[in-house]
Image (cartoon, rainbow, N blue to C red):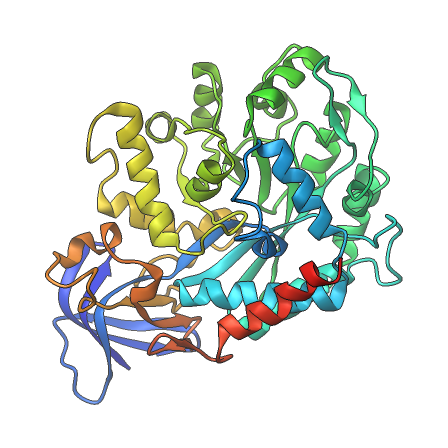
Length: 437
């Protein structure tokens, strides 16, 4: 039994709310209920956050790649260098620490866009899904739910003239021989209970057009995610290769729809927006990454108005603060439009709780029968003192999160994760990746 000073329920913010949990579900939600015998939660409670786009191993890049100049493509070479150094044990240590940091930021479920599949030379491990096993174990130990979005990655990209490029270097770790063998590996994996197995198309650069229908077919009934139009170069190369935009290529292959999520969707035409909206494809924005990599600002308001739900991700983890990502979504819209209030606080909270795009439809609200995920955000910090609790998402940071429940399990209490010193875990996982070069 829990009692909250304020709670954001499906009908809006209430003051004083008694919440009862059993079997990992909310069994009673009583606005105005008494605190007698219940554990008091400070501040305002929100539904648990869904980090809809994560590359766990990118956490090792924070504070290592931001000081110089260059472009997304220069950053990618540094990312490849880290990917080349990871084995299953190092991957477990890094992902466990990264997921624990997410839990401290209110994340109760993570969508891991997983393409680091094979050994350093590209040959499969004896256990072909051992890197997936590492991620599943990491999430279990950190206490967050995992939707593992296994990425189909088949080629090295498209040239500016639209020619298909061969795999090179560390890309061989990412790739399966073809879409059928990718599908066979994914469907052979038997993760622990509680892990959702989804699929992903890395991009139209990395999966040839003729292979897309096989990926779509193999992903039927699962969430399907794809990097989309993150860079103008991608759009130009796709146009040169196929005479179509990346969105149009995906639409023709049947890759758009209510089970699909387009990540970034930064450089879109009006026709692309219409295709995504009409198909009700979710769009996952990652504002801190899109800013850090100088990607640009996508048409978020237009996508919502066209019919696409929004989700949020921390992607390369330049910061792990989903409320800050939500604020950046609104701030970027203000910069684009010269208008304030492009997204209401309730819309931002909905994007924070977009568990449906991770294949989990019964999370993301504090309601009877829903999964018992919640985040208690303090209202007495220097950031939140004196605010209207209904606007907490526009002011609070990850540092203000006091309590996190995932499926009824207490993962964070008093701002401390059950694993203890998460900073020490991060340091121990990351520093060897740079000192062992």
